[in-house]
Image 1 (cartoon, rainbow, N blue to C red):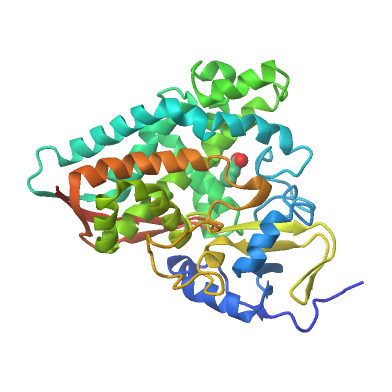
Image 2: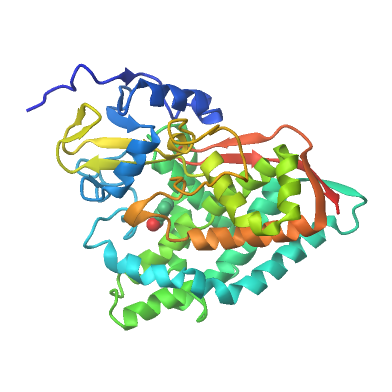
Length: 404
Ligand code: OVV
């Protein structure tokens, strides 16, 4: 029996969830990668990995690194979850598989085809309205005016949500992603409203609350076929409302920031708009809107030459893996000529983001509208980071858009 970690295990007392690290996580992540395949975070008594090789392998090893005890810091072998666990994110096979099999075709590229023309037109309307009446150029906050507005315009309708209360989606997601981290000040900030926000979210998951033509109704129809039970349907709808809004907002924030700071890449995209998908994936690699998730070691597991004891949490730094120089040439460079595939910004393996095609379509629609109408996008002020225990995010992104 191993009573204490082996002496070869590097340790750190740095808090990766401190405001200093959340403001700029890159120096911490470089040190984490350089320290070794696995590092012990003394402050929290958890293990961590930051190299692409090991994060990628852990994500694929669903039998060794399990999700059923939660993918946040809280270990459900010893603590109660703050909400009923997600049937997708926080479960392992076999229970994971029926919900996943139901949701996957509902969010597949093929199923999204009927939304494409509508979302492209919606993005054009949004960009037109922003440029309308403005002179040669317009200054705006790209987070509120574009990155938040566009997903909130198309996604809740696609799910089939009612009109009322949609403003609850972002604060709910923000708290949920904070709650994957330690019980710090960011969690305390959201705690006051979470009962009210959860009550609203849970009410939207009922069959009666959903329009008959959206993703939500498709999920409920799967319960009519007994592909899932009627008790599972609302929790799968909840996953859409949990994982589908803040993530795409900050994914769009990432591509807009990348473009505003890389004018030559913007011109390249304008010259060849078919690069939009690569551009979005490169932005997801480069910024990694979802920075981290945990797993639990199902048995004593050796990583590198370190033993992670059975039942212990390990923190996988997706954002660090995506900037690991062992895997990527010039990882800190945002570059449309690289092949970003193999990034772990959407995860990897059986839990890999089931909504990634939705995110890509949103990005493609918004970029198509912008490349057509906007000659230049540049920073018009200092971007402000929004600190979250899991997401790398902007609170504001002042830009100037110059008409084409
Ligand atoms: C990937 C993700 C993040 C947050 C929530 C969920 C999934 C969920 O399934 O509820």
